[in-house]
Length: 407
Image (cartoon, rainbow, N blue to C red; front, side):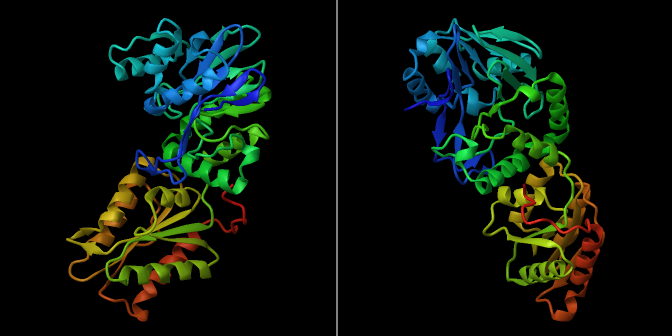
């Protein structure tokens, strides 16, 4: 297990999880990484851990640089289990008496997660600094980005920001740096990560970005080293600028039409709606829940201005895959979205109205009532669908989206 040199005296010693496909409901189609970093100075410092099953991999990488027992300090920027569950084993290997620095909320989380584990927890707060030798680490608490314990660690002498989950992505690749991975790859994965994990926290993230600017970190940042995905070395400000853009949740002239169908009637309505929206100059993503995962749908929803949801009625209720999607969306609390609801039915037809209510409860602007059609739609029955498309298009921004607007 080979480490990767980032700069002189700083190494990536994390783990690659090529096989993981589900991360608490988020589909990790290309696996993930659990990044950890080693700084070799008078006090050798390990920043962040890995999942428990990958602790031997981390220790193997460290051993190629230095005897793990020579690590003097460990820093935990984030107590979520994908970064912390390996810490008890790591501390046993290097010495449980070694200080493990974390935020005050991080201390509470680590003690609650690892009952009775021997760990010499030391708390730090924003603006605290520890000296390593010729290098130092300064801390900045970043609560709710995306856990209460989250914090940044910054080495001003090297210009490296260890940013925990912020600026990360779920992507397992043998290439460690942004300039080694295509922008088309990392751009989508960064947006997917933001949309599925950080949407709920856009307000604290926006405040954190302002705090980072005022802290003096921003002008000194040369490298951003997150806990997942690639390390930003070629232009670290690019991902910061993208976050500054994404936190605004600005609507675009784009619509996601997402549906499921039993006997193709709701699909027929969805296709007619998509065609009508496209005729109005709206960029459309048509997504059937039978072959699209909810995390990919949410990625498309994030930078869209409109979300039109279709479901047949099944047992007097919404179709199960659509109900699951709505539950997932509800927790993310999207802002500045236009909504629409539609669906076919054979007997009673409750689903479309339920969709209308659900989207309204999520604070989506609903320009027209739900559209429901009994049995198989005739062409003449699709007029309300076309009217919905016109109303949605009129409510969206007028500017067409550029070809690279995902980024």
